[in-house]
Image (cartoon, rainbow, N blue to C red; front, top):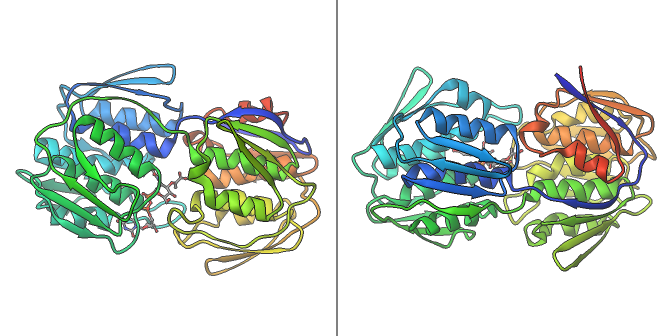
Length: 417
Ligand code: EPU
């Protein structure tokens, strides 16, 4: 197993380019099931979760070929309609194949994902939506089995904002008979991105990115070529890395409009942010000011930036209150941040972070993807050496992160444990 060795205290400086978005690429890959033929997806990040999605598609009979950041997926001759426990347990997003398989073959069998480090993460709203569209769903031996001659349009009102649920039902509805209306839909940027891909395939989707999405089902879809949008959370992580090291970093290939909530918060904390000609320049102050954060569905503050922002707040001037409102157990990084000498108290879904003058490097363990990123940020700011183990979590979602940070002047190395 690999680990990262970080010798902290270096101010990051220079230029970094953001990779394609993991959370946009995953549903886009899955959507190719709906349109038999040869697709070409560009700006795909090299990540473990992308490999898992490729394995899922290959297990269904797709032919997949990668060349740099371009992936060609041929879904002409799919033979299977089942996603096994082995694949779904390594990546929950694999459950998104259920709706597209059902739409294409009239039947599908997908393992239930089970628990996750950051919360229970049920898929009840996905299943309820598919049922409203006429699917017959049964749960057997840990698997969801679904059948439907042809899905039909329905009006679906989500109890809570769900990114995966919105994406899943948008895909299922694309070739359903009649109109589907998704109300209280999630508005995260990955959703209009998926709608754009589906519309390129010939789907009729309006309103993606707002809380009401209308999908008029079409009989068939065509393969596409598409370049994946930049990863807003990777960009946000580099912004926070610049802030925590008092650095001066120019971030290329990012969409600042996807990160308004983070930009406002960082500016409140005293970070200078300037946007010019598609480059975002982020300059950290000597010491940031404390700010309060509440995670919310988009366009609110993203839960996927909560851990990184908490790392920043551990060294802020003053006390910060951070509440996590999306996942019930997304404070796993706190006990590791304490090992750096941070002062954090958790009560329910709220963490009170009293800024300390400096962090001291320590051996720590990553527990999930964004927690891993927060430990790297703390290590960059801490004195002495930090060792982050179990970084396989990190490889699920950050492309070449240690290389990108090293190019900005960080002293960071990957070694075999
Ligand atoms: N929920 C339900 N029932 C459902 C679906 C969701 O109760 O049927 C709950 C979840 O348990 C959670 C809340 O609704 O408490 C929001 O979950 P959502 O469905 O929006 O999350 P997701 O689609 O499973 C995606 C990202 C996550 C990101 C969340 C929230 C992907 C592959 N994953 O998950 O990304 O945190 O949206 O923005 O897109 C990450 O990249 O580190 C990550 C965890």
